Amino acid sequence: MVIDLHTHTSSGSRCGYQTPHELIAQAKRIGLDGVCLTEHDWVWPISEVEALAAAHGLLVIGGAEVTSDMGDILVFGVHRPVRDIFKIEDLRALVDEEGGVMMVAHPFRGRLGNGLSVDEACDWPVFRWTDGLEVFNGRSFAREASFACAVARKLGLLGCGGSDAHASGFVGDAVTILDRAVHSEAGFVEELRCGRFHAEHRLLRQSYSAREEIQL
Ligand SMILES: [Zn+2]
Ligand SMILES: [Zn+2]
Image (tube, rainbow, N blue to C red; front, side, top):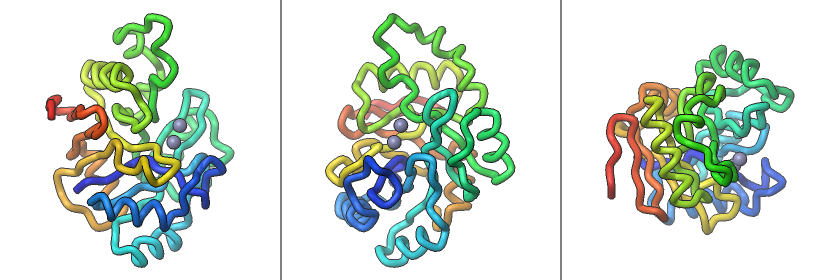
């Protein structure tokens, strides 16, 4: 089941240039099975997410991209407001209370210029607070994606993929592929937590699984 785990819309992100309807229509057009709405520091109301899913006949899941003191963090399975949360330990506590999952978004965007080694990156505290990382972001370059895979593999962490699309032309550039079909947010979060998925960067033709790395 192919899902874009990281998207923004004009309804929830000032930087979003697609309505949720445009996003979901595009996801269907290119053959995705679902999308996660991960607005900056804002969680979609469940009723609105369900209405979008029903209107389009596609799995739609509300998550968020939370600005933390350790960078941007994607959270799933969380329904309480996240706007006032900044410290990573507070976010971890909230996600645990809600039974959710948290992944570091694009951890190495703009961070590879000064000779950072994989070993040094593995020591970043953020990876001790999170369940995994976004190894493939639709806006990441090949070197950044490969570096993220190397860190995830070394730490034995889960690695997801999402486009970070702010406009519909970018939807699906990077995706997460679940081994099993899910029909609800609870099912989706469970599959993520159990690591039954792999990530693909469709522009770079790279693939990552916490179990093994697959070259497409
Ligand atoms: Zn971000
Ligand atoms: Zn984003």
